Image (tube, rainbow, N blue to C red):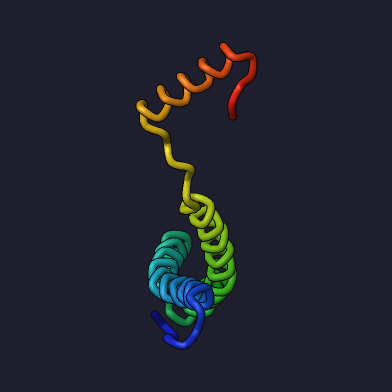
Length: 115
């Protein structure tokens, strides 16, 4: 847990933000390399004075937008996880089903159906 005194739902939110930022920092390197390669292939030379401002702008823009999108994505998945982890009604065993069918059959013979 990141903050021991905070409620668990707050920890998940903070964790999602930290996770998004750490991923973007890691992925920013990949973006910088890819943008540099594209610039090199288009211009035929590797000039840091030319490439660095463009790559920095691309990485900076991506850091902001993709961190926000990641947080939204995490929120959607977290909501889905809550739905999926709700306790399901237990499936009755075949013995329980047979007993219920016998009760319903006996009740139908008497003219009424038991619930």
